[in-house]
Image (tube, rainbow, N blue to C red):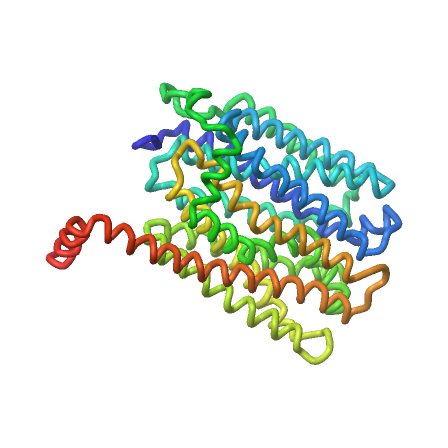
Length: 431
């Protein structure tokens, strides 16, 4: 059971965990700004960089269920430490690589390390904080990710242009190693005196996964997550800056500044999403539908605009909608978590998280194949925007079905307890 009070130690533990998520998010999106220099260093085309996104996001995706398993059974302290060390090793390999296979190994390790952070920070929130605070803290954890993505835009571009490639990655790797040491020394999986779960408290892993997937809210939240986070993950990992450079005809510095629209919208909106934590689940699911409709409309407008260069305001608005949708995706976790036993919370969050990153991995691969070897502006526009539109549409349908499922669930509960429901309604009316 979650604690009923909040201690200063809880804030310290969460602060270290959320710092790990910030660092992981930063490393997740560094390739976006560094795409041009990476292609030059490795002697490959920009389209070939799609394999980086596919492999990194694919590694993240493949690790989601193991990450949920580790959160529930190994514990966040050790898992976060190992994740940060994997990021440090992977980014070091990537930074010194001069061949495509070696660089791919490095980015895959970054994806593995990144995969374990979010699920384990959420596990710390569940173990250390009262339930009434958890939705807001999950949203604030997302803010840390937004800050990480902000640092990976203009500041990263300035560092690569100034101190250079080697110095930039030496600093970022050093921060990850130092934070891994702090996490191992300070973080604890649960408050002092809280009973540790026994091994026999957990059913077999396959049974836990199957039980979580059988819950309709978990499945619907998975598909809603496809369209809310998928475009954010795909564009943020690699495709936003190349799209802006090739289809919109801007230079790398301007592209990095435009990508700020995604990060700023995400960072600004996610605390507002956290404030909806006390809303009924159906209302929170309905809130997912609105930005989905707007994003579908914005992407369609860009695709159908005469020529590839659209008005700057429209481009920025669509990028901001991508960030807004990603912020809304946080509600998917909380909605699914509410119908899940505490002992299986990590697995449920991991399953939902697979939605957006499955879309990002598959979408990135499709974009890379669509672009081919030497794509022109029209091909870039069709590939990137077309795939993002398809992913967003899938998520919109998922959000709609999630809203319907929660409405049906509420009706079933009312049918099971008609007397209690009538009494509650009367009490609300009298108040």
